Image (cartoon, rainbow, N blue to C red; front, side, top):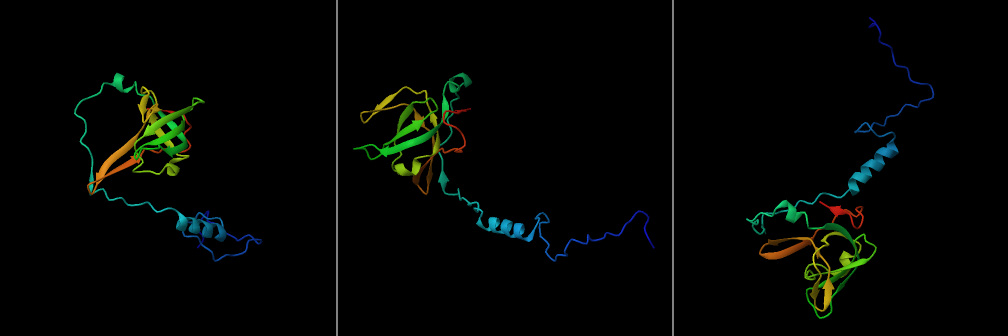
Length: 173
């Protein structure tokens, strides 16, 4: 018995029958499917992070009004150069592109956590409107933002590194 409106699908004469069937049903060919499977194998695996032994500082109890907070100028900065400050065990001297066309120097006491060459080319977050401050005879014009915590009783520090597609000088809110 024929169902009204149903038609038998006919294979086109120039199409070769194939026994390939992609499991996701989206690959146009066996080669594309193999390439997609290889890409999945080499894709980075998301690291599982154990925060059970982490200790953070308590939050401040005092409030900062919005007007005071909004006076801080947070900017994306690109690390052009980074070097250890002579005669200092802690300080790194950063030469930064802050989008103004002139290099900015910021000193940061993070040498225990980073080697200078690790940071060249990175995009960081800085507060750029702090008054200049002299350290070890050098002037620091701003502050780099970092996250600090203790893990198993040991202090840890991570600079805030942001997407490298964000241009130098971009204002952060």
